[in-house]
Amino acid sequence: MHPTKRDSLIPGSRIHNFKDFMHFPPQILSGSDQSHRRAPFIHPLLANADSLQKVVLKRDVLLNFPYHSFNSLVDLLREAAIDPTVKQIKITAYRLAHYSQIIHALVSAANNGKEVIVIIELRARFDEEVNLHWKTMIEEEGVKVYIGIPGMKIHTKACVITKLINNEPVLYGFISTGNLNEDTAKYYCDFCLLTADKRIMTYINRLFKWLEGNKGILKQPNSNYDLMVSPCCMRKQFIRLIDREIRHIKNKKPAAILLKMNSLTDNILIKKLYQAAAAGVEIRIIVRGICCAASHRKHWKKDINIISIVDEYLEHARVFIFHNNGKEETYLSSADWMIRNLDHRVETTVRIKDEMIKREMKDYLELQFRDNVKARMLDNSQQNTFCRHGGNKIRSQVIWYQTLKNKIYTS
Image 1 (spheres, rainbow, N blue to C red):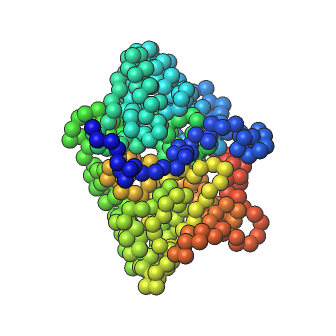
Image 2: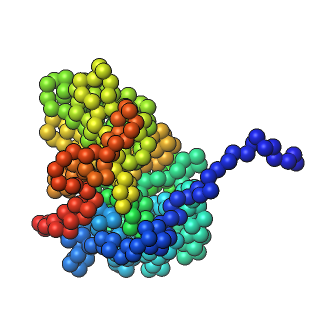
Image 3: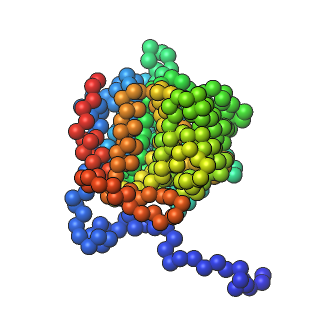
């Protein structure tokens, strides 16, 4: 064996996984006691419910972490674990907590005779060891474990539960923008849709069967926008949604696109957004991380308004809203607009149907665009200057916490 050549070594930084800082005592990082951190609270629709699954079977519920408590998700699985009419639980696991209540609820379900299937991603960067530990443990407890597809990460966050009602199978569960991880749910801003929508759950169930090894079953018609899946055809469907806004503006109808994601790097979708801007479509984007899109070109009829918010909590949700001539379509997604997400990962994007939830999500994004404390403008100059439009100080994360806590829901 030849000794390692000096020019084959690539120097790295001293710290590679900055997520480790999350486990430091708060006073070490800030120099003060952080016990004033806003405590999460139970979603009002679930707070006094004697059965969470009864609520979900009746209506969609949107959890917004870390404002809403992650315990509701754990409790939903615990309830399924002890319900004699629940026969099967299928769930994906990308990043699991070091002490995972999610996993313990699934083991409890398996011990109670349910068929439990977990699709676990062993290549989640920096979490490989934890995920491998949980894989070994739950297999010993009788849980069926699949490790996905060679060469493709399973990044979608979804769960489907099969329950018998009058001897007929009924599906319910959830689909999330964030990991099923109690630790990161304290710091990451994510959405999780609890739903029993028949079309959405049926397709998620079909997706699970494909992940379990049933080849050829993942065939999604282009007309199905209730649940979009990558690498199947998600990018093509986003292109169709943008093209529809371009057609509206060319027909002298209102057209707008409002996007929120972690990173925007996919060249094909960026060029399509440029076409929309050139046609005059109003485009606003919130990108926390990498953004490869320009905000201005001389030949565009409208510039693209792009901001980034970095605050106490990490903005991790992906939300896409298309005006559709006044019939807005709103989507939650596990996928950023990146090549890796759209071509090399299994991702899901779900269409929101509940009008109250759609309004809530639109209010959330509009509030972030009014942020004049933590928002920065991303433009061609790449100066990332703070958005200091006048008036009262608006720190969106603080205001949104109070908005959700004071919100009154009608059952």
